[in-house]
Figure (cartoon, rainbow, N blue to C red):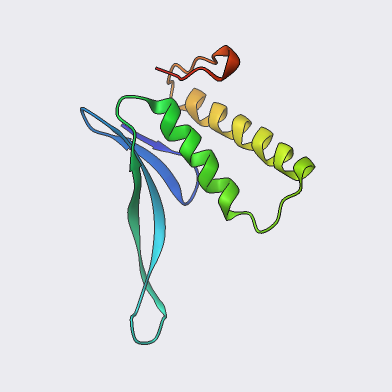
Amino acid sequence: MELKLDARHKIVSDRMNYILLRLDDVKDKKSGEVIDKKWKEIGHYGLNLGLALKRYTTERIREEDKLIVEELAKVLKGLEQHVEKVVKKENIEFVHKKNDEELN
């Protein structure tokens, strides 16, 4: 399975793991110029897609330069809607749990 989240992030899976990947620039060591792009593993999340999606959310928040509480709430809401849209598009069953329970 491959679940494209945005231009720089995707989740792939093998038999045992969901794996979050980020597309990073490969720079020339001498000049510092970007010479290529390569998918880098951010983490392995076992059979828990929810954990991989939470880490994706964390990665996206860390990419923001400065956030105040209101902006953070807006970013989180936007990410939640984006993830739901991608999950729906890929026809993946995604169940919301109450009280921040883990998704299994």
